[in-house]
Image (cartoon, rainbow, N blue to C red; front, side, top):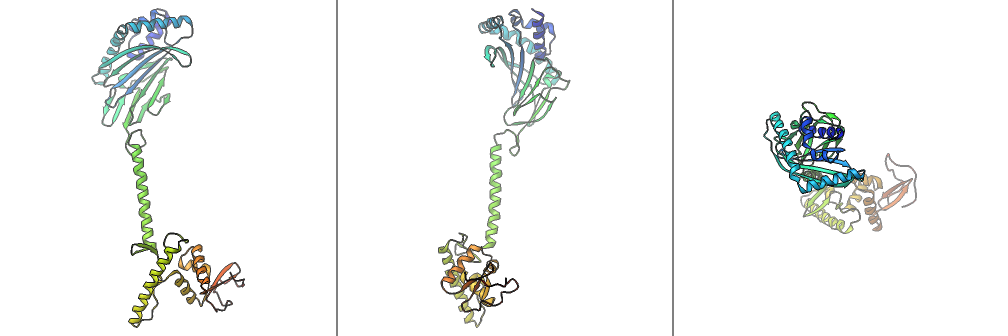
Length: 383
């Protein structure tokens, strides 16, 4: 075995099993005899919810010349024809590692389903990759809704060509990690060598993501939908309260106090129906008042839009600005203009301009009369 090969293989097995170099060198005779040095080693542990971990240990060798390529192809053939010879040696060393981890953590551990494979990959440079896969039971401690991993590898050493990755299952989110990883993914952290972990490192703690949190749990989508639905429902309640104050729900039809039916200013059919209903109510109220000897006029909510405008004119001496009508009746400018246009066409009122203001008057009212303190003071043409 060459000195370079011995050094690399020793480092690899120290990473895996925290074993001494002589044992490590003896354990990988297949690699050493063929002069195939791994250029990089990737150790990946995929945590499971029950605390077990699916491991993949990959040795990658650059196939950058004919000799290295031929050596790897020979190794590949050996593994294909007698994989048990490789898994047996690897398994012996990993079982020693598990016994050490059991003593350190107090958890019973078992090595299961060990396999080995060899293949060539283009990344894009050509690599030969030997991968050992196995299950390590109780690799992580299960603490309620948390998984705590790393204590089985306490004091691990990574050489410059090695990388350790830990990935957690869907539905979990990272709570803490030590030391600071070199790379962070959505569900993975990675440490690159050269690194000498402390006696309490590496450490990774992940927790089940709550339904209202920002983790990766499958219920997150439902939680967001629930939040949106709640917001919409709250908005509906606010709108209902506003409508209840502004609208009068009578006879199964909603009508506003000022005669607006909620369908906008361009809904004459509905507005006319509402006006007829109010006119009937006003007539009934007037008849009842006359029968009782009363002379009071009906309340504004029983008047039609047109009657409300005419009453304002009466209350203001037969002359008022159009803008004040809109303000006092809490109407939009469009609605006010529509109602006044209808009354003007029926010759029930007249309009003219003073400055930039529209002024509304009853027929035969002197247009020079006083408009009050907001009078612009200049007469204009009739609108």
